[in-house]
Image (cartoon, rainbow, N blue to C red; front, side, top):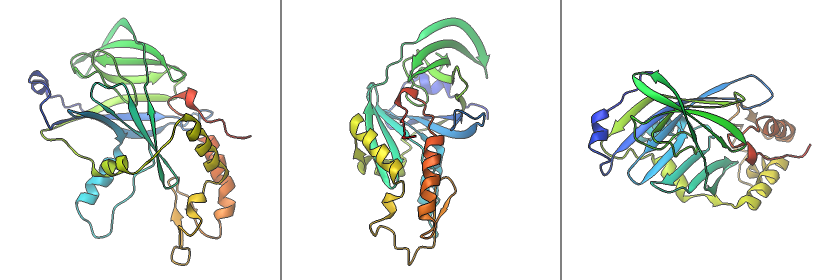
Length: 275
């Protein structure tokens, strides 16, 4: 997809109430031991007061819901998303775990080395930069022609927008494929509600919570939270159809999937589950 770039908008500066949206194609290995890449799309929304990074499924679900369709709307995939205030180095991260929304804070630091290599990309001049972050070595290509010091995930700090980003092991590849401009802030109501309803955890509590979830990944369906007399099945994010009869056998399968798809962007935050 061709990137739409409104150069004249940058010349007048950031105005109150507008949104610059940059859409990234993200190819990643959910399982680092396999050569299978999963393609997804993420939005980077730059507003006057805050910057949001989230899966495109949230945007699609929110848009469909606003149409007031009579039969509801599809739930988004359970991607993490990040928010930080303009000029702040503190990122609020949100993660789905069962039916809970976990909130964590972090202050990511990247020390970039700017390199002389340059290349052209859709009439933009890109410059190369490298850093080590989250236990991985990264190469970025940025353009100072789009004067936002932002990028996908929690990457920031280069003198221009990050257009391409990848790690040296080929686990993650981010590529800017489209941009959009809104004269007024494009509010994602679905995300706004999640910001208000979450469970904040520090690092120690988060680790304990993740391990507890691994031991009983369907605990959130118990204690009367699901009326199986009225519910035939629950469709999980990975496509599994969970029923009252197979919930026990599905537990072992879910544990194996949790351990299998354990390849986060920030490798030094990986959870070491029991063998």
